[in-house]
Length: 288
Image 1 (cartoon, rainbow, N blue to C red):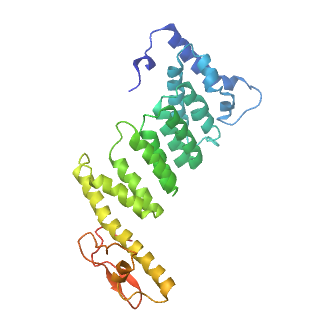
Image 2 (cartoon, helix red, strand yellow; image 1 turned 90 degrees about the horizontal axis):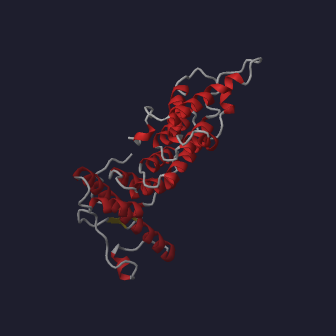
């Protein structure tokens, strides 16, 4: 909930002046040109910057941000307006969030309009980045930025945003799972395994979340072991011209301290003819 002084029921003359200023801003464009008919939405060209409006708001920039934000929601609900996204960035980035940098709603609502309706994810991320910089203790904005990057398959950036969200006070624990999953998407199996294991071993996590993490740890441990063994087998074949007679050979020549076993304690199976290794244990999560 926003501070009480931002209520539209403000009792001072300053609040009334601020409302008057907002009304003037939103309708003045219609009076700037009386001879030539202009397309709907053209008046937004003359909307002053947030800094100018803040100076003219008699100390009620928060209230003015409320008014323009509510107007913007109505404006972008009129889908028949041609080129209605032309001044989208100006309204949310340069006006509303300049008037009140700590007002969270315009950041995520504006970003949603930019991404989903205007189909401009980079514009959306720029607005969210501004909100993150102005509100470093808020978890919602970096979380939404992470999902924006996930949808765009920018998994490295998504992980960075989710990490910021996790560090913010009050962040839901589910974001840690989002963070871990991004490393799997990047193919960074070892980092993903560490991230999921930290969740599985954290007693403060909810039981369902820990169980999900344990399943990921189970499958990722197999992936990591097979990747490591496969790399050593390829190296051996490259150096010796043929696969080793057994996996124990990798221990005998000092490449491994001991042979790994899968999460259920079973040794990995080795095919000497092909030089391939596989797990006896099945994955517990679905594989496409």
